[in-house]
Amino acid sequence: MLFFTVVLIFYLSLSQPVSATTSPLATLSYATYSGLTLPNNVNQFLGLPYAQPPLGPLRWRSPSPPLPSPSPSSQPIPATEFKPICLGAGVSYPTQGQSEDCLYANVWAPANATTKSKLPVWVFIQGGGYNALTNYNWNGSEVVEASGYGVVVVNFNYRVGIWGFLAGEGVELNVGLRDQRGLLGWVKREIVQFGGDPGQVVIHGASAGAGSVAMHLVAHGGRDDGLFHGAILESIFFPAQPFVGELGWQFDRVLNQTGCQGGNSTERMECLRGADVKVLQEVANHAQPFPGRPDPPLPIFYWTPCIDGELIEDLPYKLFKEGKNIKVPVMMGTASNEGTVFTPNITTSLEFTTHFSNNYPLLTDSDTTAILSLYTPPQFNTTPYFDPPNRAPLYSALATAYGESTFICPQTNVLNYLSTNTTDTSPTWAYRYNVHDDENTRDGLGVPHLWDAAAVWGPGNINPWDRTGSYRTYNKGLVGRVRGYYFGFVKYLDPNGGKLGTEPEWEGWVGGNETATMTTTRRRRRRLLFETGGTRMEVLGGEETQRCGFWLGLGEGRMEQR
Ligand SMILES: *[C@@H]1O[C@H](CO)[C@@H](O)[C@H](O)[C@H]1NC(C)=O
Ligand SMILES: *[C@@H]1O[C@H](CO)[C@@H](O)[C@H](O)[C@H]1NC(C)=O
Ligand SMILES: *[C@@H]1O[C@H](CO)[C@@H](O)[C@H](O)[C@H]1NC(C)=O
Ligand SMILES: *[C@@H]1O[C@H](CO)[C@@H](O)[C@H](O)[C@H]1NC(C)=O
Ligand SMILES: *[C@@H]1O[C@H](CO)[C@@H](O)[C@H](O)[C@H]1NC(C)=O
Ligand SMILES: *[C@@H]1O[C@H](CO)[C@@H](O)[C@H](O)[C@H]1NC(C)=O
Ligand SMILES: *[C@@H]1O[C@H](CO)[C@@H](O)[C@H](O)[C@H]1NC(C)=O
Image (tube, rainbow, N blue to C red; front, top):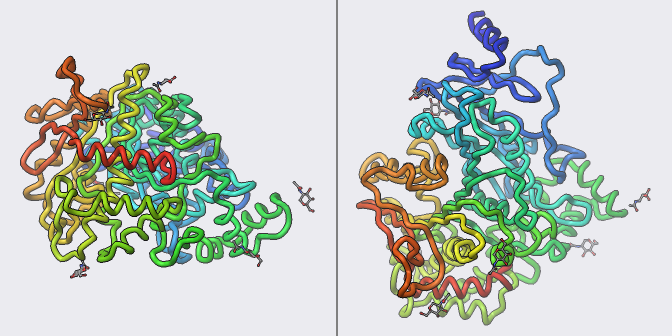
């Protein structure tokens, strides 16, 4: 009864919908939600629908804004539990915690924020290789508190696998990316109700989320829809992403697997939209070899965004090169050993080359031979080469090659394009995360993919990704050191605005070579290096620069990277 009274009183005071009760309200344009004020004075709203459930006739269509709740005087809807995430490839149905009805967002905001606060908004786009969601429901409460109650944090689910990236005649393409844009539209319309500023939104993607951020930078050839004002790309992921016309084989497989191959395009789509979720999920939503490629190994990333000619007009490398990107400040970082968690423990050259051709199916034999020789000792014996214990002979070479091809060099190459176009004066920053952890080292992982995430969000907030204890012991200091720069970027679009006093000034990234006339503030190829013992600037070396040039040549062609 007391609870109800409290809710009612605050529901009636609509001018200040976010309030410091235990059940704060958010009065959105379509319904009112009640969240929870946490002990640290952060309001938490979980499972807010940002679109209509993408079911039946709405499958493979752009997300539609949520429908208004039936009556304006209806009870606030509890937003105190996470909702299911989107169905991932390769999981059986039904699966606990995953559903086709999955377009939900979570918000953390200072309890004392009001509609007038206009705090910077930090939107996190999780990863999972576009085939699954793997960084879901990370807890934003602690970063709101640690930012001095100065930001609003949003995270959310979007469609992946067949549900987000099926491509074919009659399918609306790349709906997984369109879900993300739908969420950004929702933020624009609704975030003021949580104390956020729709005029200062920073999108921060991790892995496929960072790949997605790259695509939002070049979406519609760089048309600025005002959805965001700064971009953080943490471990940008660039798989092969084909032109839609090259994916007929994949669509045909799905039609055959679901018995929907008959009739014209309209009838086929009706059949697919009417198909049982269990059939689509279990029979069609899993990896198979790319045409002409042996099995195993299966491609790690079977469903990916495609070049649809509209949202994604062309290969993103090409769009960045031509300056067809939104001009906003950009901060990017990768870990030293991005490839290790994706790499089988291989021994032979054939396993090495097959790994590349099965994941990048347009590569020729001479391409994969060139890759092998580039990453095989003795010429490859400098940073970031590493020598993990208990691993077969070619594991390290493959891990380094895959890490550079798919994460590390896409970062360098995109930054080079952004920073050398003289009409684009938006600043760019790069970092490398080289923070040692005993358990990662023991497992032969080096400094693996997204190892920086636990420092950003804080240990305990990104389970199960912070599986080791070093962020609570000898790497404890990294949490404040890394976060400071992130807070600076989210609040001021400049990482230096929030850095700890003990940390160095982070020089912006500028591509190309040093010349005698270069000033110290525009020095070339400088990135911030995070290590256990301290932070400093480093220069990207000549060998790594050359290897990134090698990957760029393939990426604009047979790697089909965007
Ligand atoms: C909100 O509350 C926090 C502590 O709970 C405080 O640090 C902060 O200054 C307050 N912000 C405003 C705008 O009152
Ligand atoms: C998030 O973390 C806060 C502590 O910072 C905690 O009070 C809250 O229960 C957590 N939320 C969830 C959904 O686990
Ligand atoms: C689909 O089935 C038809 C008829 O059974 C067959 O001719 C065709 O090759 C199949 N396509 C694929 C991609 O499996
Ligand atoms: C598809 O086939 C149905 C049934 O034959 C027909 O009514 C419809 O007009 C066709 N649609 C198109 C776009 O050809
Ligand atoms: C730089 O970007 C602009 C668009 O902002 C584009 O017109 C121009 O061609 C680009 N410059 C180069 C050298 O690609
Ligand atoms: C990798 O393979 C080597 C031998 O080929 C073996 O000694 C080692 O234990 C394997 N490591 C792992 C982590 O499976
Ligand atoms: C930078 O210098 C290297 C040789 O040191 C050269 O191969 C490369 O083309 C130069 N790059 C640019 C952008 O000038």
